[in-house]
Image (tube, rainbow, N blue to C red):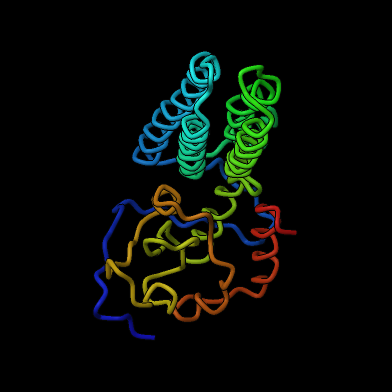
Length: 267
């Protein structure tokens, strides 16, 4: 299939990897490492996430020790504070997840892997649980205020916890498998993706990257570049894309797809 001439190809990386030499889906994988750009991006996102989380905790303390100490308590101000705390908590969690996609933890360190990927949920609990308890036990709130503010805090808090949970976190092992497979299948660590997509593809000629898009661009780079751009993983349409991109489809392609799916926790 000819590439859409209306879309500009943007090269994110000029570095290519040497050909792999793996012969099966059971091949031993190397330890994937993020590119310097991905590492820097992840670090920046994490600092911003921490700042947002600190703002959420600060908003909680302000609400606990000032707003709820007023007599009478202004219901509208309390609701606004709850929403603002939630916005800071959720924004921090979303950035933290993006950082983990660019620079994931390893499953070989299960405690670190769990904490790093679920930290946003813990922060949301810290930001809302004490607030919910104080709202329902405060002597400065009447029954109606407790109901309104308490329900608002519970709902916003649950949204914050849900946003902080990573149900399918990325891992070094997943990226290692995918990077090795790309080199095995194509001979080089080079893939293609589009802004706003969720997976990266074998090359810029495949239909999915040639669909019309607002920025009119196709990005080409390494697996590390793709993850740094927010791609969650390799497409599973490998057989079709290998043919389109002019590569041989190995007989064990189903095993390779199954190995990639298993590393993602998709069964």
